[in-house]
Image (cartoon, rainbow, N blue to C red; front, side, top):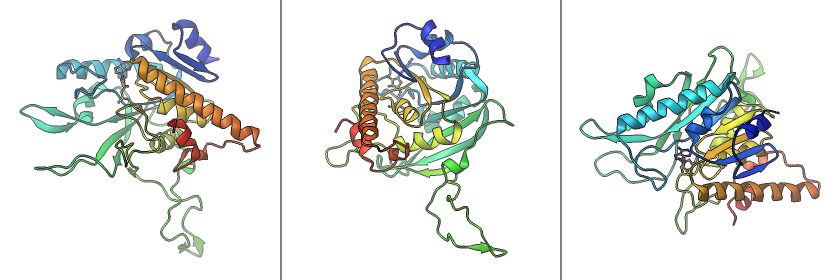
Length: 300
Ligand SMILES: C[S@@+](CC[C@H](N)C(=O)[O-])C[C@H]1O[C@@H](n2cnc3c(N)ncnc32)[C@H](O)[C@@H]1O
């Protein structure tokens, strides 16, 4: 099994369970040890070089070079029909731009084929004084082969259809599973704060919302596929991948974040086991919305 191959060439994982390996490591040298064409899907958000608590800012050119290098490694590790979903924000470039979208700066350093840019529009954020208040980040959807890639649209259709009974030539026009969710995703951010913290919130300062990752993993992979996140943080990618019956490998530089990720996964597996012992099969749909699962995953 492919995960065992990875286990054999790496050092001891920080945490492992069936179908899941988490390493407390610098992702770039670790990726270099892995063999070609191993991954079906990578979903990740790297540091943006903006001075967050988990990064030391470096010169812009160095940062772009580093991004080009690890992305090229991901290309090598990805199977022919595989995909790469990259979440990126904005950077201040003195004398040029207050907030330049990082994808503009990386355009010629990414060997993948770009299918689409998804706008992730979230409700809360900082207030702009001499500019519009920022409310979006981008998810760039790349594939290795522009002709053959997964797009499991029926697994992610949006059931909120305005006119479900609309007909064309006497036939219902709308797909009964719902509509295409479009390239603008309105999904709340994981928020902090005493009264407004999201249920899924962990102490990690830049956590992915479960719902965004759920949509990406469902649309771009199948059960049993290998999912990878080289900047795992609080472990959202790993958690969602496991819940959706995929296998997962995650790398994270800080041990305290590995610990958060491991705890979220252990709590989730415990919850799943309790549900199954009650005869309730875990289908993965519990991931969305206000499900009990989220409270458990955030350790409430
Ligand atoms: C934007 S956060 C990812 C958050 C994650 N998506 C989540 O849901 O929690 C980036 C993460 O990359 C980690 N990191 C930074 N440099 C790294 C490196 N060279 N190798 C592995 N992880 C690294 C940081 O510690 C941080 O947790």
